[in-house]
Length: 169
Image 1: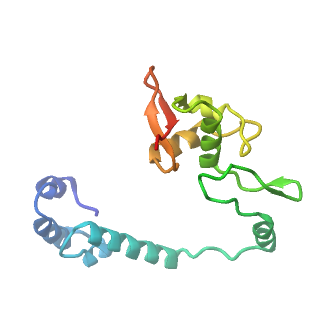
Image 2: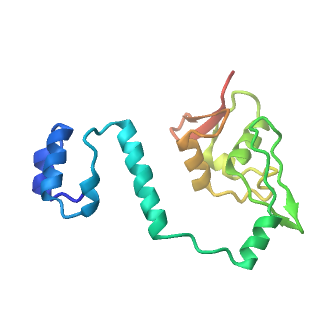
Image 3: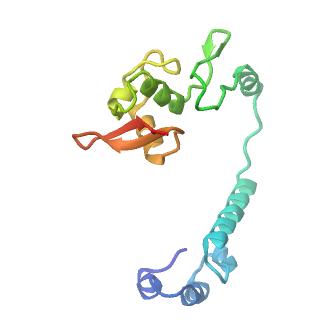
């Protein structure tokens, strides 16, 4: 919101009404002129959507090239059902888009219930998604930290490393 350090220190923990007033009076950014009077979850979501829309209008996606359209048509969607057996499909001998979440699930399902596997163990294991075990440990770590792999719980192992286990139902 482009405030000077001095202004930021004077309004940072104050009520929104006072902060908004100071920002409107002192900010050089025109985008701040549209700050809402209420600053709650709904207003933050609405402002984010509005700013994203402005950005998308200012920086439109380039038109697809013939090659990009051809590649899109060749790539098959993989079933997003987390209970389904993970599999990788290919077209014309090329693998489709691989799914790190399905890799994590497949690796965990290959171990006894309650097994705790580290990011490294998950990344270095082969699965139908990554038969050569070439998944990025960073991608595995990111998915576990985000907590959005259905049926998987991020945890730590006895050494304190980020790990995962299947959720017990």
